[in-house]
Image 1 (tube, one colour):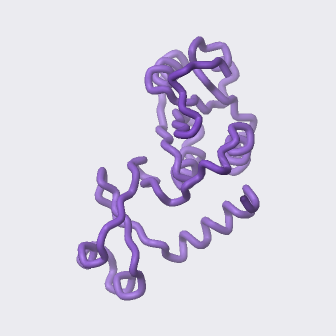
Image 2: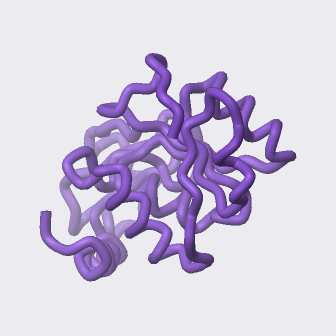
Length: 161
């Protein structure tokens, strides 16, 4: 990957080729800024360079793009792609699971329980104390059974920290 001083390895940001949409979502679940994009390889490379993002793609020609940090994904399987990205880029210590909106990529903000009463199902409101809200799309999140299932999948894929 070509070097560039504009990349911040402690705040890794990604531009994910449209063919790896599930990987994009998994990266968001881990707390990484990951934008899904389509277009020509040249357009993707230009955007990645302009926004100081690492381009994640299966297109081997991306390695020759000037001024672009990229990782060529070696598998079509999203779980294998996630393992590759975390391993090759040393992301394990940088993960902040469930801190970004998996839908629109914004950083979630804590919200007082009282403010979500009319936004979540009554059972959820009565059985949970902590909630987050996306400042961009307004979705409300809480640690329900789906989060526990995802944690198990991530543990299986990435192992213990």
